[in-house]
Image (cartoon, rainbow, N blue to C red; front, top):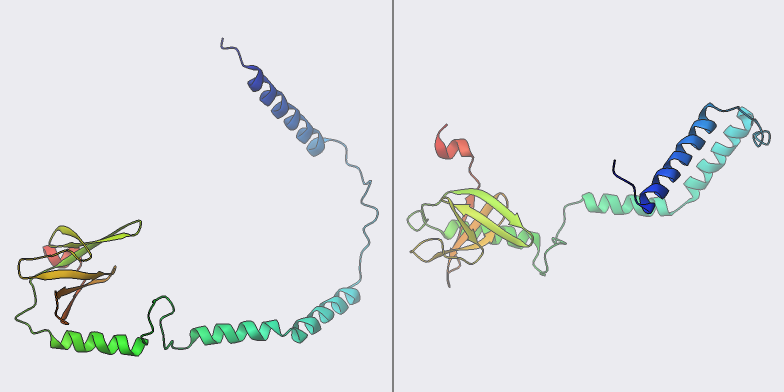
Length: 177
């Protein structure tokens, strides 16, 4: 038999005392001491209290401020609050469209974006079965990975404004299964 240390004996004795006290309070004699001060309120008192609360809520102007904040957040945003730039959303969308339009079909690399990994602050894109980080060259034609997003990657050439966007492809589409 293994002997218990002093610390273990103290823990077991406190646990046993807690279980005994809980059992006594649960199955022991029921007393009404301390419960006599509770008074029953009538329905009219509860209704008057509810009406008073409703009046205070109507008078509270912070609710209108909250509603204004919620409604303004639901509107279309002119500027992305998460980007650290002064560029408007409409400008960035127009730039992406114009950049995509300038890429000719002959210069587009034969690449398949099939996966996305994010470990801490580093993002990796799986392109043609190889993992690439932002800024890495992806082929011998001078294409490099500009930006990695979960649903797409942007590929470009050094000192060129052209951008190629590769969308994430499904496993079934790649393998044909």
